[in-house]
Structure formats: structure tokens, C-alpha cells
Figure 1 (cartoon, one colour):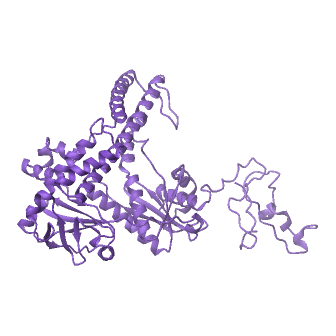
Figure 2 (cartoon, helix red, strand yellow; figure 1 turned 90 degrees about the horizontal axis):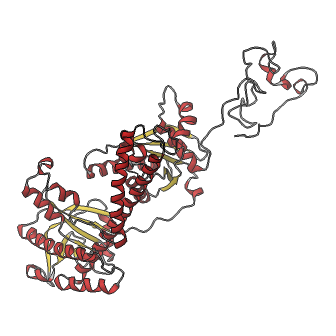
Figure 3 (cartoon, helix red, strand yellow; figure 1 turned 60 degrees about the vertical axis):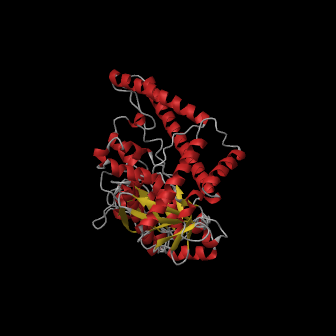
Length: 526
């Protein structure tokens, strides 16, 4: 859980102190990251970590040193995960290229694998790309074996922006201000049992902010024990009461001070760890039905299903725009998910069913070739961020998330549910039908409905009923109308609609002549 508030009313001295602390600690963090990521460094030796922390403590404090080393470990672990994902992506691309290059020219592909290339020119260019990917794979594999990562404090994208200032609309001075602010270090981990949950950056219940100055900057302190109290106060309008409860009880709260060079504003972010959500049995989660959601490139298609798998009401769509910067995309996702969660709560539902999507193996151009629009569509769906956001937001509102297998949900949903539910007052799309398929799979019901009647040349001319009802349902014993057409042994001339039900005719020896007749329900068949 993370909340942020702006530090308003800072004096010139406050900003000078914050800049000095950020630059000093940022330099220490850069040095520690360079040491930890160097080839040949033994990262499994606990004595190495103790030595690093001891050296940092002499130039800052023990708590600042602990925060810096922890941030270094986290950044290295993130870089290793990204390195592994890149390696797996290269493996997939190389495997696909080898497969397609091994096929004859012009050979058609299947649903599971593409075919050969259409021309020798295409084959030649792809063979050269295979060599490029193999070289990249060898370099990344060597880094992976030695534990070497390539990390840029401040961000690789911002570093490359220095060479394209005109395209970014920045001057050298503006870029330098953003670059330096991104490399500062003003983060402090929380500590349970300490005063207000943090000894390094402390925020009391009244909103007063103070921080422990590093040893070389202790002469800038304006409070006892080498602390500096800022003039600005924070309020934390969002979840401020929850943070105040943790602060009062002395529970851990981490803080980070951030400077936005573009807006010339200072912010304070408070974060803490929420207790893990308890797992709920699937039967209890779907007892009252589910809200089934289908993720798409520009909207969420959501349908409500009752406990029996029947669609209730009309489909709902929650749109978002994923163009623009990362902050805008994140805000759009949060807004759409908030609308969906509030709608599910208003319907009295306790669970949301989603697909367990992962497009990591479907984004490579070696698999889809010239289908650039499809690759862009798949890459534009932020499945990982959607699931991460939805898990956290659903847990906050007491909703259970049910993940289902995404196989054939769109195909079977459109085949079995789109047309029956489309009417003059209800417009159904493939995405709405897919949400129904997702919900039925989460509820444990089959997605596909019973097939249509067989052709007329089979034993029963009109075929079996596609929907069966129980004996107590009104109209369940109604006779099927006579099917027009030539005479057959099942339908003869002059018999009317009772032809298909011989016992319903008032003739000698038939049950309808003497007593009430009731047919048992037909057996289910799929």
C-alpha cells in the first residue's frame, strides 16, 4: 500500500538540505551498486554484505546504509529477472526462426505453428536475423552465467534522452535537472516498534516531517540528535487514517521523498505492507455468482452470471485509453478497474472471474510475421499490470479473484452465446460472449451449449430438443409442430402436430384416452 502527498511550503533552506542529502546518499548508492554488480563479486557471502554496510555506515548512518544495500539487492534482482525474460524471448525467437527456415518455401502453416516463408528473399533475410539473434543470445547467456547485469541509476530511457533533446522538447539544463533528481536517494525503510514506525524519515500524526542527516551533513541539523525538521506538513488525504493508526501504534511505515523536476514540486510517499489475503474455497467464492471480465486492448467486457451459469442483465463495458505516458496508462487502468469493482459490489457479488493470460510467447515477430497490427494489439494489452492491479484492488474491497484457463473462451463464447443473447434491445459482441464463457468456466459449468438438431435424413426428422426442461415446467410437454416437407416414415400426411407424440392422440390403446399422461424428463446428453 502506497500513498503520496505533496510537500507544500518548503523554504529555500529545506530544499537545500534535501538536495544535499539526496546527492550525498545517491553517490553512495551508485558506488554500492557498482560494487555489487561487478563481475566476480561473491554475492552469497554474508561477510561481503557486512563489509559494504560497514563502509556505508561511516559516511551516513546504520539505517541509511541498510536502506541503500537493500535497494541495491532489489535493483539487482529486478535486473536479473529482466535478463532471464530477455533470454527466454531470444530462445523463442530462435526456435521459431529455425522451424520456419527448415520448411519448404510456400508451405502452409497450421493453427499451432506457422508455415514456411513465401519467397527466397524472405528466407534469406530471416536467416540473417537468425544469426543476429544467436549473437545476442550468446552475449546475454554469458552475462547470465557470470551474474553480470547492466543497470543505469536514473533509468536507461532518461539517459538516452540526452541524445534526443529536440524530440523530447527539453533543454540541456532541464534534462540535467531531471537526471540528477532521478539519481538521488531519499528512501528509508520502516521499523516496527520504533517511534512513529521509522527512525530515519519520521512523520508524526500531526504531519510534521523530519529526517536523520548523514554524518557528513550533521552540521545542517535544526533539531536535537542530528535531525532536520521540514517546514512543510503532509496530510495524506487518501488512507490517511490507516497510516495514522500505524504511526500511533509504532508499526513500520516506509517513506520516500521525491522531486519532480518538470513541475518543480516535492512529494512524500508513505508505504507499508498489508497482510496477505486469505484463500477462499472456490465453492464459497462463487456461491452467489460471479462477475466475469474479458480483458481487451481498450476496454473490459464484464457480464454478471448467477450460480447456475445463466447470464443476468445486460453486458457492461469499462473503457480505458492506453496511449500516452506510463502515468496516464496506469491512471486509466485504475479508473476502469475501480468502476468494475464498484459495479460488482453493487450487484452483491463476492468474486470476479478473469482469464490467466500471458502473451509472453505471442509477441515475437518471428511467430506472427507480417501481422504487425496483431502483434501491436497483443503487446498493447497490459495483462501483467491488469492482474497485479486487480489482485490488490479486489483484496481491498473483500472480493475474490478466480483465474481460469483462457483456452477457447472467445471462440466458444461467440459460437454458443453471442447469437442467442443478441436482441433488439441488447447488442452483444464477441468480447461480451467471451466474458460469459469465462464466468461459466469459473463456476464449473460447460461453456458449449447442446448442438443443433441433426439433419433431416436421420432417424428423427426434426431432431432432439436443444433445451430440456423438467416435468414441472409449464409447456415442457408441448408437441413439436409438424415439419413441412415430403412424406417420410416419421411424418405422414394428415397427422398434424400430434404426429410426433403418439400417446397424445385419442385412439384405442393410447394412454390419453383413459388417463392423464405425463412424460418423464429426457436424459441429458452432450
